[in-house]
Image (cartoon, rainbow, N blue to C red; front, top):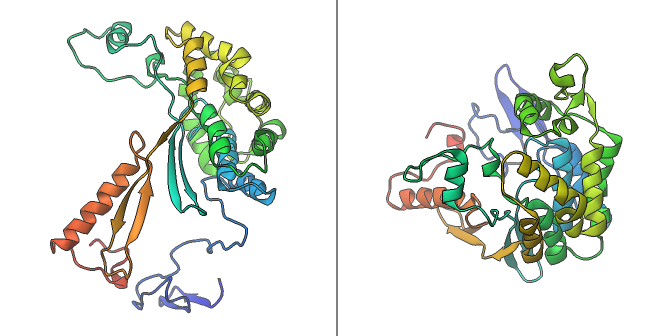
Length: 342
């Protein structure tokens, strides 16, 4: 960043970007991040993993729009940061159309198996019918139909600009899986933290781990900086890219999902997978809150995906903050209050 000088001995800072870092308090470090801001004329992708962000940027450079780039980034995150997201899970989409100025929401959560009622789940878990119990996250009863695969397809079809197909959009993630990638520090940490859970999840656990004959069960989580490849996940992406939803919810992949769930005592079947693919992701109404506190000149409207997404929590929190200020319980904060307890 230009025009920034710092002397940490006497905490002397000078920054001409006063609108970004407005405090004049010498004790307040106005350069609050270790990285400079990112500026671009072609679009910006933000996520927790640089290689995944690069996948999204690659799609923007090829002519795709934000929806296309988001799917590419999600797939690349599945490859590089599998502890955070994956094609076997769910997805939510919040999309702003710049032409119509409308914010769209789409719920890509997977549906529950059709043969599972609450009474049946309790019976499978050994919970008496007249008692309440917590759903154990590591049991197959917690598994729903994978919603992300259909959600990715629906996102591209409903919100993409049509310039790129699913093959091009998933190619960056496929390349990472086939050619390999260096594991980042935080990804490596969480990968190792979940190693025991991965090994107990299914007979296919080795696909998510690195071969090591000296390790327990012959494999272990990759460490930061090590190269890791996942050709089987890349193969799954190729099937989805070439055949759309049918490539995931029918055929080889569907057979594998049903078999693993069945072997573990679950009840998800081929009809559940086909039904989810046919019905697709659910279009829902986005929710918002207008915030006009803290002396801002114009109200700011914050949009979120409705429940079962968790964005409602952000709106509730902001609404509480607004009402506390209106009731005189909290003041208008000054720049020098930034990062202070109040």
